[in-house]
Length: 275
Length: 252
Image 1 (cartoon, chains in turn yellow, cyan):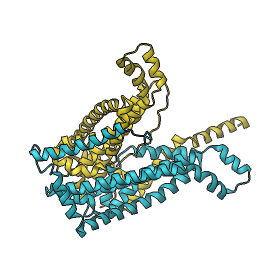
Image 2 (tube, rainbow over the protein chains, first blue to last red):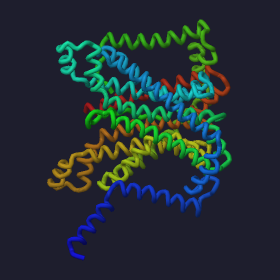
Image 3 (cartoon, chains in turn green, blue):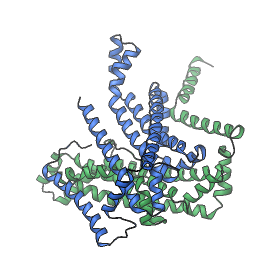
Image 4 (tube, rainbow over the protein chains, first blue to last red):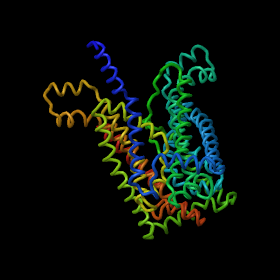
């Protein structure tokens, strides 16, 4: 082998070896492997289950159980409904608050104040008001998800340059025209930041309410499995929920990539992402 | 967040908003258009709160929650800053690990709450672990952002002027990273507070969250509202306090 090809080989080898994505997959695989070895060798079966056991529990105890699948499907529908509500209401309120300087200075602090309340303390009240069914979960998901959307729409509108507004007006744009052609395109990147955060918080709200209500739905099964010390089906169920969360997050991300014009970077608004 | 000063007009709109909200509460209970079970009158909530703060059970519940938060936050603070700092010391480690941490953070960690109960029991241990886990992410992510966002030329300038490792850390890294680091700590603290409260509400034996859930189960709505009022008032006060502290530190 000539020296040149040897060098080429070692450099491709080290390029793969230093590839972050490859290393990341390797890292995750190593963690899974370590859990498998620990779970088989040392762990107390009442608390831990190796990944293979969790997969097995999914196939045996979760997938064939129509009631659990139905509970998971309900969870998906609730997240979708809560998120749709958050987006529609959040954008409308955001546009209303951001419309004028006065309304923003007057109402934005009120929104921030409401956002500062730890909403979990209201969870029992929400359940009392809306009952044990899906309505409470949708309401709680909505009340979590709507705030980042409002805040980012308002922030996006604040950053529209006065010059652009004036230019539009001087060229004879009506108020509707200004909103449609100047403000809306401008707030898209910031809006998507809000939509992403809103999704994270909607997921949180729905899942919190699901876990709190232990008489039915996901909360019933997590409690059942935890109290029976059967970790494998519990982890499998949690894994399913995590997968649902990841898919919902990915959906928003894909929409963002498709719909954000050009490669504008979204302005970063530091919002305390709340529990 | 908005540094815009309010005028008399905007301030009066804000007060009017609060007054209308409070007035609506009073009016709805007075006319009996909502069930007292769902919304007790403000006067009875106030009376209950007044009675509640005089009991020792109240303060012991508050103490349980505060100790849990303190423990959880200290763990998250030490582990988060240490892990974040160590990760930024290698470009490769940052490229590999940072996306994992920020990716995990988009999944609601609440999902794993039943696992915390399974591992650490129903006592305060599970809440400490849960709060610490939740607060770890924003602290670690902001530490990474803080130390990796520094400009290379400052470090080079310091080195060329003969600064040692410690000097570089003390005079360049730390002051440069401080504001972002503080943001991480603030976000982490409020997440920690909310997650400890949430954990107590979902499943625990003591603490503020447990008391709210208990009052709801017993349908003692005045008591529940008294607890909620206490939580809302203290967390809003805390928020304003931290906010003013931060702006004061910034302006210096």
